[in-house]
Image (tube, rainbow, N blue to C red; front, top):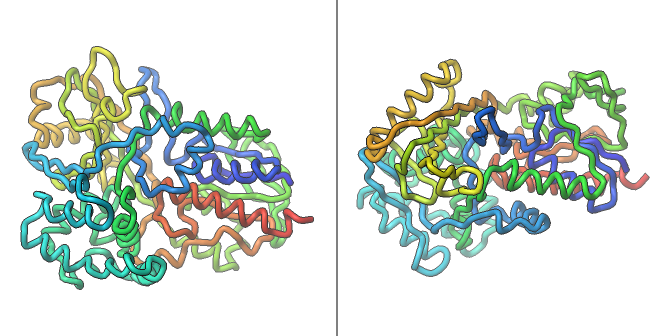
Length: 457
């Protein structure tokens, strides 16, 4: 069977791996000159490695790490101390420290009881609000079913309704919500946040963070590309799809912007939500599964890199903050040294500005100046060092907006078009729009293709 896959992000490459291992032929079509999708990285003219976001890998990314084991690159991922670090105004450091107190859920209880990020009253109310998660310790599947039913309310409303305090939302949960979905607790679905909390509550290492030891292009994507091409897969970059050519409810081929036509037995769109919206045939919107995709909106995000002439941080981990326009950041020279440490230079802070909307029309140098000013207020150590250079990467359409009521618009991997399938972290699966969600969606999509009549003709 010949399969054409639109998009060479994690979802598309995950789909390709599964289909190639089943003995089929796969061609991946990527509109950019490099693979990786929303996890892409590349080098600029100065040799700096740039990324669209800040990529950390949770211990609960089971499907992602199963793929990594296939590639034989588990040693490319560096596990960090099992603590979530918060940096407050003036450099005050607090944490959710999960270490040295057994397994789930006890390590989590210890982390919340001992954190200095919220007051004692907030801790008590936080514990009260999260009591419903106890059900998951007894019946995990039933608990997740209950959580899926919380998609029509924001996490903030759910949390307050269950006794949670505004102090916890502002100082603790907002930075985490921004890091997960690029929106705050007043706008993110309760289902999204509670799904993650439930996983953390029952799996000891789920909340443990890992960083790639270098840039995604060299340490993740190239091994994936090699695995795919070694098995006969073809990857075409700078291959943008102009049109899905269809006759009624069947795909006849793909027309690229270059004029090239691609023929296959089965077709997969592994583009992001906004990408599939651009190329879906208009007459397919008579099917609800396709029409509802257009209800999904994407969130903008801006990522800023600041390289200093000395070390401004000693935290080898992800850092959150409630006191700046960047919700999370890391010193990549410490966390991912193979590509980001430069001899003779110091810290490389990578910071994610969320929400990104105010920064999209702003000139890049102004974005960098604004971010640097906030960093200097947050980390007094930066006043001792000069900024060597900066980079700004803007992504107008990133994760889909995990707002209340959006879950019903996420499509299945199988569609009413018998030879057309969907992958992508926005498609139906229990994870949020994430790297784990992307890999899982590719696995589910490949299973759908292999079970379809197209594969058994």
